[in-house]
Image 1 (spheres, one colour):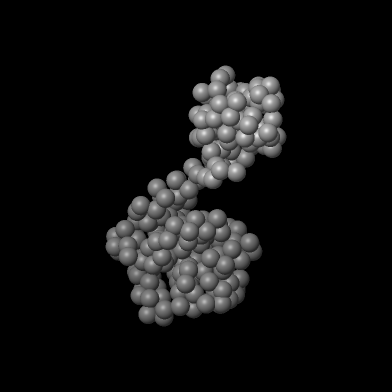
Image 2 (cartoon, helix red, strand yellow):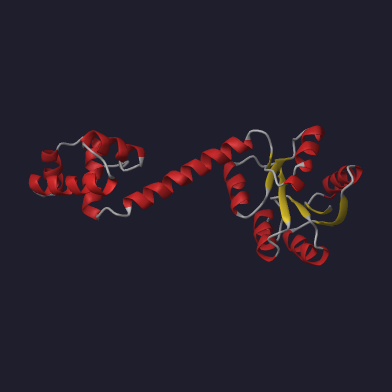
Length: 216
């Protein structure tokens, strides 16, 4: 497997190159910044790029996006000191096949690198759980968007008030409409969300984030 290393610390690159070579991988090049790794990826056509995040001109996440846009089959593994959730999520969104922290023990790193060819997730211990939680959150937002898309703006307002625990009379006073109109919107909400009663509406509204943080 041909490997390209991208890190702005020459000593780290040298140590990593020696380690990978000892494991039978072929280190075909090294880069110290984003522009350099993009150019060398184009020139050397490696199978795998180990990419640091905190590099200049541009950073590793931007370089990853550029490489994956040009060479989607080229694997990019982020190798960084950053355990920041946002860096992790952005790396995966940018197309990286893995995210490893530099504090890995040698045997852990060897095991994870051996999984690259098998197409398995390449993540430092503990990071997989963070990703699953983020994907779950995004899935929930997608479901909210899809389900809520059928509701009118007034129905959303009624739904928010229901989530607060307001009665129909209170909702009518709050929104300056009649109770009959509230009942009409309630029937539409039940029908559109395929729910049977007010209790289910309250549960659905809270679960899907329709309880606003502040009073209008």
